[in-house]
Amino acid sequence: MLGPGPSNVPPRIQAAGGRPLIGHMHPEIFQIMDDIKLGIQYAFQTRNSLTLAISGSGHCAMEAAFFNSLEPGETVLIAVKGIWGERAADICERIGAVVHRLVKSPGESFTLEEVEQGLAKHKPVLFFITHGESSSGVAQPLDGLGNLCHRYDCLLLVDSVASLGGVPIFMDQQEIDILYSGSQKVLNAPPGTAPISFSEKAQKKIFRRKTKPPSLYVDMGWLSNYWGCDGKSRMYHHTGPITNFFSLREGLAMLAEQGLENSWKLHKENALYLYEGLEKLGLKLYVKDEAIRLPTVTTVEVPQGYEWKDITAFLMKNYSIEIAGGLGPSAGKVLRIGLMGYNSTKANVDLVLVALKDALQQCHKNKI
Ligand code: PMP
Image (spheres, rainbow, N blue to C red):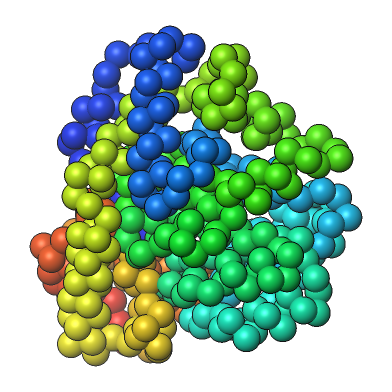
């Protein structure tokens, strides 16, 4: 699976997921949940006490972030440079927030000046931006954004579903107030759990709201207790996905053993190796500015004279390799190749390059 996720699950994580089930209120699962919390704090580089895994996919964490931090009628500013900003805006509209969008073309990132203009104009209580924009293959620089938002009395919310573990991110140092990710990308666990964390500033806002969050399932008051973050004895809230907790804990342990710096370096090196090979095949990278290319998901322009679907189908049929087409605004324009966690190897790059070379020979529309 060399698409934008899920990525392959290594045997060690598979074995963890194969362990016998235990109860969702047993002391042993609470220990596992505490380990997960520590693993997320390490991966996010945060000391936030309100750090846990949502029982759901990345979208569920996205909803948890907005449902808890926004109230109807409040103003939110969303950076849109691909599909994830659009999804975020859609969620905020459902809440009844006043939604403003800051829009860039897919393949580009935002500058601090552009964000500052948006903050000054709209005076939002919350600003959303995607770190690893998996639809366009862009890694948004985050330095300075948290401080900027705080100067405008605004919280910073970042989506790191496709980037966590593959691209440096420092939640506390970069003053990110709410950060969430997913289990099925660099962490190489199955889909179904989503790390999330809230800064002190964010906690103040979410625990002082006037209205109840519109979802009981992702209400941070409940989840904070269920995850042992509020210092009180834990009460039943929902039946956690126990098997997925086993797998997520193992994925986080593997990342900690490898070390974040090593993981970031490896993702970068293998991405550069992939770019070189793609260019040798005559293919063009979609993101022109090398400095903002996302090492976990590479976007390649669909070459002239080819249908993207023919290429992805050819790779699947002849090489059992999954790569993906575009998504949202990049649909029809790009092919997306994912190298995440366990999948980020030179051998996988070689494999996908051989398969693509063959596809370029076999899939041309004018081929007789
Ligand atoms: N944000 C980003 C950047 C993503 O890449 C994805 C998954 N492709 C999501 C959010 C949503 O995650 P999920 O599919 O797990 O709901």
